Each structure stands twice: as structure tokens, then as C-alpha cells.
Amino acid sequence: MACQQHNPANTSVLTTPSHRSASTLTEQNKKIVVDFYEGVFSKHQVQTYSDRYIGIQYIQHNPYVADGKAPFVNYFTQYFKEHPDAKNTIKRVVAEGDLVVLHVHSTQNAQDRGEAVVDIFRVEQGKIVEHWDVIQSIPAESANRNSMF
Image (cartoon, rainbow, N blue to C red; front, top):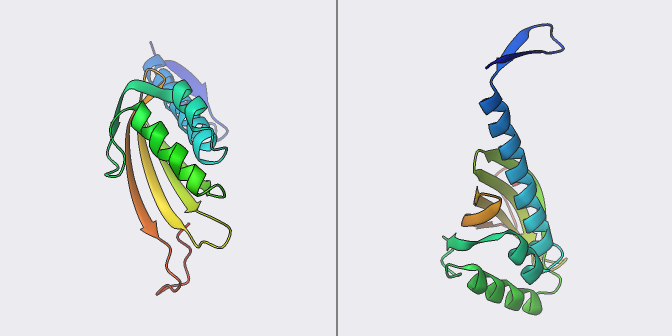
């Protein structure tokens, strides 16, 4: 059953319940990923947020971290012991269905130019079950005046 919605431009838009529920699910997935990311990578509460959000099966495409929740927790717990001032600032969040993409500025300390990171997460039934990332160092000089963010 479709329902009609009215928008400020006075044009009618038809939406279906499945469209609305998919949109709601996408928004829920965004919230899950952002809360997880801020908890792990800003608050450094790796175990707490991993227990809350990582699924039983967790597929990792980062070549430095093994599949599964325990390897993720072990890797980043050690990383934050070695880099207690590490900071990750989310610049953009894009989502479609079960995929959530973060564009992030990652630094190890205040003096570090850092890296531009794109993290892609797949969410299934409220849990993060898969992750990919692309990481690019921020150079001292650029061929243009555009920020990487």
C-alpha cells in the first residue's frame, strides 16, 4: 500500500512502506556504525564497543587485522596503548541499505598530518559483520589547494 506525502514544494510524492522501512533501517545502520566508530576510535573503548556492535561472524578486509571480533579487539587495544593520543574525526557519513561509509581524518598525535581514511562497514541485524578500508597518507605538499576532506 502506497501513501501520499506532501512536501514543501507542493508536489505529491508517493512512498511505499517498504521504502520507508528501508530508509529507517539505513538510518539505524548509520547510527550503529557512528556510535561504534566513535566509541572505539575516539574514546578508545575497544572491548566495550566491539562487544556491543561487532557480530559473531566478522569479516575483515584490512590486511593487517585477522577476521573475527577477538583479533580486532587485540589489534586496536595494542594500537591505542602505543598511540594513546590517536584521534579519528569523522568528516562524512554515507549509507545505502546495509553499507555505511565513513570518510575520516586519522592522526596518531597532535603533530601528525595524519591519513585520509575511507571505512566501509556492512551491518546485518544490528551488528557490524564486515569491514573494508582505504588509507591514504596526507602529504606535506599538494598539487592543488583542495583539502583531502
